[in-house]
Image (cartoon, rainbow, N blue to C red):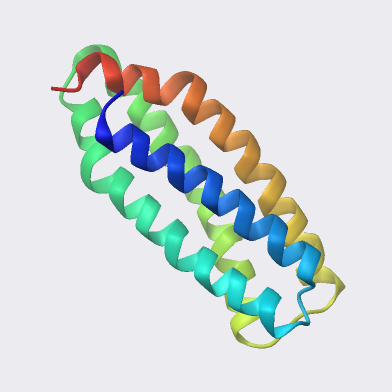
Length: 129
């Protein structure tokens, strides 16, 4: 397994742990808010790594180009929901709608992670140097 994929998979575990931990601690607690802010930084770093290294590599190869494009485009909606969640938390909004959004983002990220690890990362491994 390439170092990039190892790093991305490690991020996945950390991201889900952070989101679930924030849910357990409660959004109104300082610990829960701090956890989500840490999650935001990690998600942004993760997306940056994918954009800088993963997708460009996939785009260079005809047999992986389409899967890279699909996953890159598909992530935009999920990223927007996650950023909305973090913005609400940063503004101190910890109402029921924010809690619902946290649940939605967590579930959608889990599904996305399963798809990435099942389909996207093996495609990358085929073309990795």
